[in-house]
Image 1 (spheres, one colour):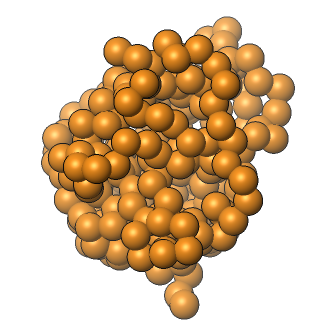
Image 2 (cartoon, rainbow, N blue to C red):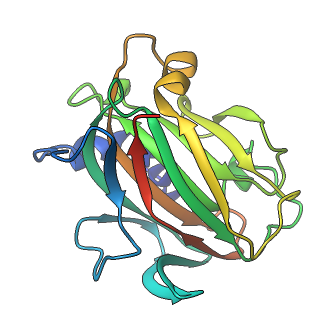
Length: 225
């Protein structure tokens, strides 16, 4: 299997292996379920790394007086995965903040040669051993696609839905805060009967466009409303 196909199968074949161990169940208040506490973390031990081509460097750094996650990609593709089952009937809203420092030039993310993003946060519904049933929604910071654009991933089709939350019309070097109703998105784009997710992932990747990118991610958590 090619490196490019392997990368896109982060939400497909390798997910089966990533979910071979036990899931981490959330034992915190129904009002908030923490995924990435980068502002108070001292390590990334709770996140699993998955490398496909080269190594995107993920580090906890201090920016504007707050600890955040920095991602730097140089022609590379690797991500961080947090396996944690989330009951979307209790906490359907995914919250996070992010910023990018640069844009890709003449990028078309809707084709394989342009399927790179300076920043993406995505949720995964595991198919278990029925790997063909694994699904994902990618919330991406696009360069060539407009804000609000929705499309199927060019490598794995509708098994991965891409949603451009940010685009080249948004400023670089600026924090943006996101709130997304994951339950509503899953029921609209994937399956009416799904009421949970099994993981959250982060990836900054530049291997297809042979470019570089730097992005920052703030705390990631689910809330009731």
